[in-house]
Image (cartoon, rainbow, N blue to C red; front, side, top):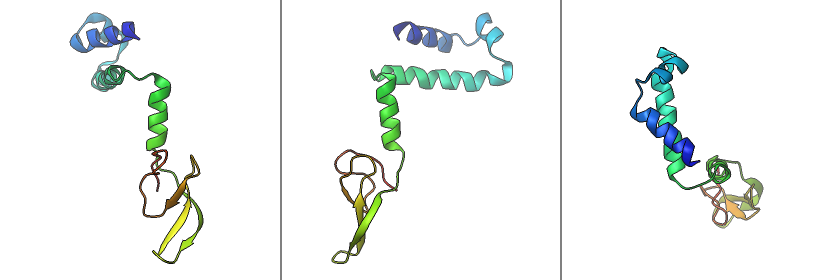
Length: 102
């Protein structure tokens, strides 16, 4: 990972080098440099790819599993699709696992 980070940082600092120009088409260079910068920032977090994917999955909104209606407070109740904890339709995140809810 450290070698990849060094490679990305060198190319970000030297975008006009011959090797980069030979590999990346002129019309794709700006987008490629942007992607390389984003990858470099992810490497700076200290997280491994599995942890990053887990955070991405948790941040993707999922529908709660509706199990009923709470007439006292006037909302739907259900379960978190990830951990099964009790949720309500006004919740944006599960209180137990942090899963984003629709």
